[in-house]
Amino acid sequence: MRGIRLAALVGLAALALAGCSGPAGSDVKADPAGPIKVGVIPVADFAPVYLALDEGYFKEAGLDVEVQVMQNAASIAPAVLNGQLQFGTSAVTPFLAAAQKGLPLRAVANAADVALEPEEDVSALVVPEDSPITSPAQLEGKTVAVNALSSIVHVAAAKAVKEDGGDPAKVTFVAMPFPDMMTALAQGRVDAASVVEPFVGISTGAGATVIAHPYTASFQAGKTFALFFGSEAYAVANPGIVDKFAQALAKGSKTASEHPEKVSAVLVKYGKVDPAVADKIQQPGYGTLVDPVALNAAATVMQELGFLPGPVDVAKLVWKKP
Image (cartoon, helix red, strand yellow):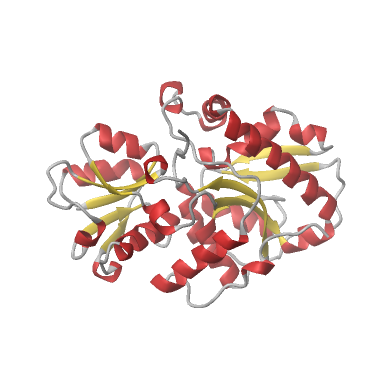
């Protein structure tokens, strides 16, 4: 079984991507041997970049890649657009929101996929052990904690309510850090929480009950929910570097898919995760290609629920080798 991600801090990128503006990234042809900086949140979703680094895949491609661990996802997209970083990481929903606003970003490689089965999902809607709520539709009129408003966690939870026959507009979603959600549940300040690993395991270990798995209820099973991106200008000026970068990441994804123990190891190394926790984390799927169909499906969900004011031309968002 695979499929967990450590923390959906990527959801914070919704604020980052939606709010950034400024230069469109470097359009200067870069030295392939020069340093390439990648802004990464240290979660399991982006394990392929750590494995490409540790397994020597970037070096084999002739690239000098530096992983810059970012504690705040909100800073990644601005740094990519102003050229401080050559590549960044994001969940699909904030990436699409940024694209809909016209920010010149391109998805260049896949990071993580939605689980094939609900029981392998890295996300969960949880309620207290003694709660009378047994399904997402019953959250109408209730308060649900999400890590950030308009994050992928928020979008997925809203979609899960709708899929179950409820009206997400009648649910009060409140933003709070994942670590605070269990206390809020226990104190009755929220009726449910939308969490991702390791907080799924932490909450159920404390007695919470899972009533739904939002990612598999909302997005395409087995397809992209997190990705690597760069600026359009950099991609146009440096297609050779982008291609090598994407191919090295594809090797990293393959290694991650086949060796979950190596994913656990890089989470300990780069994410400072407790080894005992890292071994228990359900890891996400690691496909090798960004799936435009999955992005389009996610955009449709966002439009349907009012998270996007208009359509997104997904065909333009996925980088293609010239």
